[in-house]
Image (tube, rainbow, N blue to C red):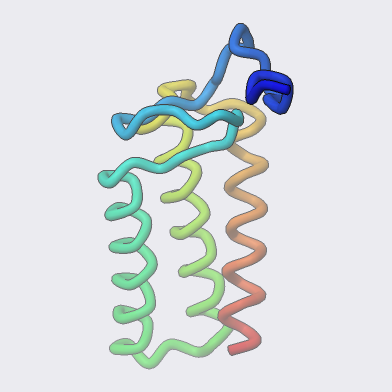
Length: 107
């Protein structure tokens, strides 16, 4: 038995996601350093600004959720893959926005 028999991914399959760090064996989205910095800066900056303004929790959740969703979608579909605004862009935006809004409201 060779190691080749245990491989589940065909070498001929084309990976959609590529970054400066290389590729993975599976077709999963990866964020580069620039994208990770953008996402972290937007999230932390928004939370600090909303705390400094003493905004109500619902406003903080809404603003943080929308800006976080936009930053993740922008990083994935403009910085990493250069696809632009597609249906998947809006799906990622909506999903991240919902997760962040729920998280901020709960905690």
